[in-house]
Image 1 (cartoon, rainbow over the protein chains, first blue to last red):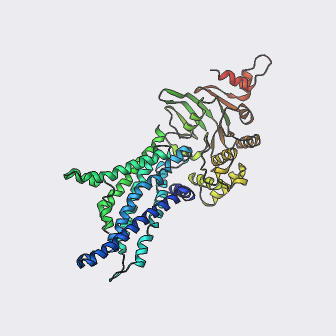
Image 2 (tube, each protein chain N blue to C red):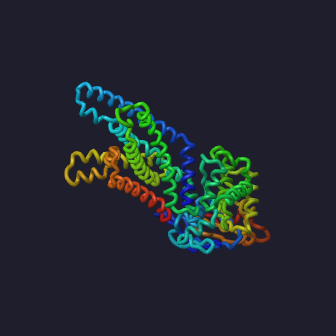
Image 3 (cartoon, rainbow over the protein chains, first blue to last red):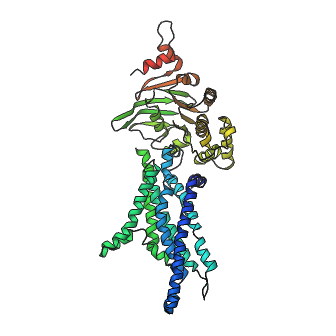
Length: 263
Length: 241
């Protein structure tokens, strides 16, 4: 445990003292801001249309949480798909290239502690990245108004963000595995991106299928599991999905690092 | 303290080392000498548990490198061929990190980091980024790392590479001082290094041990008539292709 924290501390330090992380923070916040702006504009248009067409029943259904924050989190997750490989690529590849893996492997530290330490550091960066976008629902809370209560349903937002975190955590685990395979950060990023993209397009492929096959593909897809979170529903099966994906990534990364001793 | 028996390492069709057997008693400094590509680094990587051997066994402080790697790693300080440094950390941050990996904590950790910084003479650059240091200082940072935790056994792979003559002199003096308290195995292809630091030398050529003797005996053996052979002559004779 202490070794895990030592490695996490070192990696976090490297994350927060190099440019890459800040570029990621900036890019992620900027793109999310763009989606946010579009969604708010759309929301206003929709409101205007509905109030003119006197469909007051529909009007009551309109709220900022479901129409702006929810879709924003879905969009952010897709963007995360592109950024996670950049975040995770250096984790092992850099140690291999810099020959420091040899140091880690010849000090009394177990491979599992190395893998978990690195994972922990990347999770902290992920949390910072996601937390930065929290400014957008906060903004709605400050300027939005409704006839009854808070303009934002914070419990739904919290569940949505939990979903986004789990989504990111699972992606990083796969990225960590990709990084353990090579000493080239570029290759690590490409492999991670290919894996994530595959898990993403499976969801699209599911649409043309039917029966059990369709349900299987839908279950495997990364983004479909985010949908219930975004509606504020915490479904065990979705949580289990992301946790098992994270476990698979960490397990494979551990196998690769541990295999060093057998080559 | 160190004992290898029939160590062999093969990579597909390439044999890096074959049937390497030698042993070191406590407190001994042994020079591991050989031309480039002779198998010195491979042997050291196996001793430190980074690579598994294809055949044979290695024991450090009575523990099998492959069966009880943690016990062995706790007792070895290792300076690989390329110093395993993080360019974006300062020397002190780096040493603190390695000290934590070696299980040091709190006051003992700070004290030991201070000790090795003094020992290897890194005080002047302790708070600078490793990236900005000269090759010689980077190498010394790698050496400092190996000394952390005061390990019984030191495995040093070409410790003076990239250093200027003054630094080389300092490091050789340091290595001589380590004798007695530590068991040191030092690889090099620089003959003067062996002459300056070690009493015993193991010469390896094309993966096989060709000599294992005290330095003086080795020179005596190869001397003809009254003319004493130089270490260089011995080396060239033994490592002929």
